[in-house]
Amino acid sequence: MIEVLDKGVIDYGEAWTLQQAHFDALLASAGHPAGDGARGVLMLCEHSHVYTLGKSGQANNLLVSETFLKSIGASYYHIDRGGDITYHGYGQLVGYPILDLSTIRTEQGVGLGLKEYIHLLEESVIATVAEWGIEGRRVEHATGVWLPASGTRPERKICAIGVKASRFVTMHGFALNVTTDLKYFNYINPCGFTDKGVTSMAAELAGTESDGGTVPDMAPVKEAYVRNFMKLFGI
Image (cartoon, rainbow, N blue to C red; front, side, top):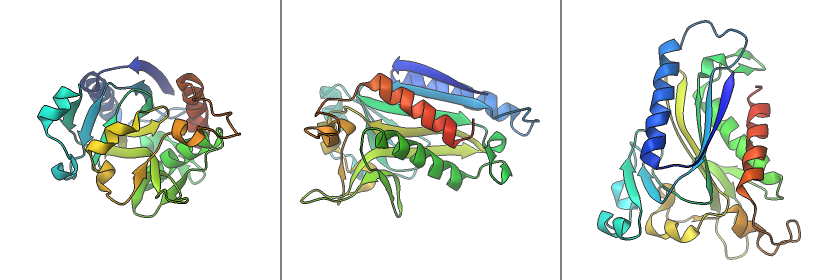
């Protein structure tokens, strides 16, 4: 079974420690009989201001000093996921699926490859933002969920994705901007890109008829995400 853990607002370091504990426990049982279903945890949370750099990321994509980050109350971690630099903060739905992919059932049988897994993560976010009338999509050679260029606005990312996997067990995950204060992205080249923008559900819904210009609440976004995640992963 997949257990959903809602940790609310949690320090990034504490969440990383929790992830690692679940990851290690699942890794220890990897390869054992799967029983009658998928194994793992879906941890949902928000973080206080923090910047994380993936293992293959470029440090110069952080455009300010660590001293400046401390002055704005932000922390900084160099971590073991894929991808480059990103920001986490209040109003952002962060999800850490810690799964044994070998126990996930697909149309072809049991077992999910990493490429398929990332595709389904993207799809779960695309399906979620669609419930608020936002049309997310994929961009070639750019993991995550994006909105197309429109008018003077470039392609812009609404959700970043970066994962780690070992023996088909995953950790890290996605960060969906719901009501995130986007100014914090000004201090980095988000995910290493200099020619693309970032956005949030709130920014896209501002003044639209589809949502009356209201700010989306985190609780229903979480509920929608869990529903779409479970459906797409066949859980």
